Image (cartoon, rainbow, N blue to C red):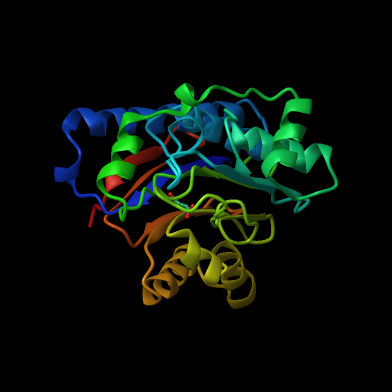
Length: 296
Ligand code: ASP
């Protein structure tokens, strides 16, 4: 049994907000990312490699707010953050406040695998990434017309097309990874939920693997991802109920977003309280779904 689920962010979108061509591009981007992760799982690879591959595919796709398509800060810069966690050992790695790095998820993974630390930020994290041979690129690579317009035209608007993946592999192990450029117009130096273990990202073989997207501050205040895990572990709630309950707490505080999660039994949840969430899942026999808008 294996399964992967991904998100490309939860946003207040209705079908009227995206042209058919745009919808097609997003669906294709999600399909490519799912396929990258699915192929790893199908060939017997690990959940950790699968979520890394899926997240990298979306970091390389300018449509999504991570890596190449990262949102602009109020200063017109891009500050990247990412995290990943494995459910068997509870090892985790995160990076935040990093600039010009193509694949922040690889830095998070190197922090986990090559250091004694969990979270690294700023210039020290960048220096470490260089030592690890990770690829940096020019500001031009990270320029996206869409994100630049969002900064100019709607300073108040949020970009929430952060990306993430959760997976269960054939060996019974879970993993989660999340990567983002943060919120459009955020103050330089702001760190969101993505890079914080137990908030935007969490994995534990005893309960579930979780990746979140949305108004990061609300996810931090509700310790969202760990709350999903706790509700399953302590209260024996179903995965869907646990995700909904956390989203309800976030909504009660005035926040919006989405949560994807998977259990060791292969149960998948893709829940959101916003208008839309770019999302998809695929399991062993190729069964799955890719969607943007609400279905109900
Ligand atoms: N959660 C991210 C943040 O607050 C934004 C997003 O999900 O797109 O940085």
